[in-house]
Image 1 (cartoon, rainbow, N blue to C red):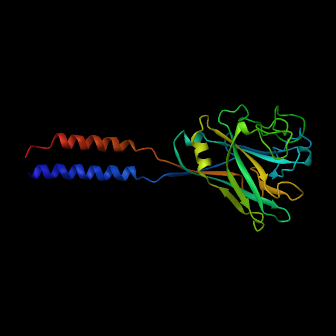
Image 2: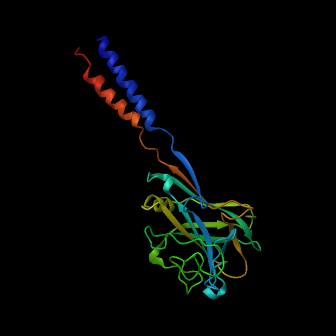
Image 3: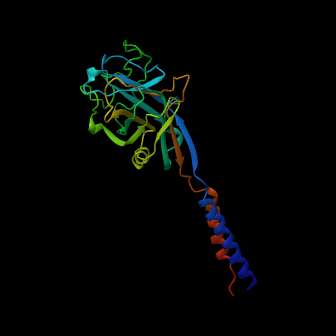
Amino acid sequence: MTCLNISRSITLAIAIGAAGLLAAPAQALTITTAEGLGADAFVQGSPNNQNFGNTGTIVLKNGPTADNFARKGYVRFDLASTNGVALAEAMLSFTVATNNTPNTFTVEVLGLDDGHAGEFWVEGNGGADDNPVNEITWANAPANNTGSGINLINADVTSLGTITILSTDVPGTVVSLSSAALLSFLNADTNGVATLVLRRIGTNAGGSPNLVFHSHESTTGGAPTLALTVVPEPATAMLGLVGAAGLARRRRPLA
């Protein structure tokens, strides 16, 4: 009977240890657009061949037509560091550089479809010389509806939610998006990169007020970031504990 009680104690201890491993905390990870394949830029409707990849800003101003100096933002994150594991949480953040007037703005964030031919757009170094080749402009930006100041090619993007920037959000304020749609979009990624498109919508979509975020080239504000919580994989040690539990049961003497 003593041996039987000992073996039961061993099995219970192993089960408790395994439960502790299963309850291991998730791992936090923050990715910026300055890392790896990361990039950020904005495109402008007039002139439509101008690149703004080397500026320290992401300017958003969506007018009724492309000729109204409409501007949309593009950010790309390198997800290689997540190594294809499941994500439990995701938060996208930007730092306000300019809230002109000030105003309350609504920014919609859309995800470019996984595997889209434009996912590896070229950030560029400014100008209209197309050097480097295919640097992002209004004319070639992926999913951009070039004839509209606000619209995108709906078949190429998925809405991930909106960010509200308040009139009280002064320069330096960090604004964020955390949504089920964003998390689902990132978890569905298959090629290790994610491009997000930004557009202003709502009452103050057009007109003179500017809404500007810092880009990774900025020297006065933080780059766009993607904070991820990674679901930890079961520890390999747990397999050994489970095996030991089975061994303890097999060696349990008969009463």
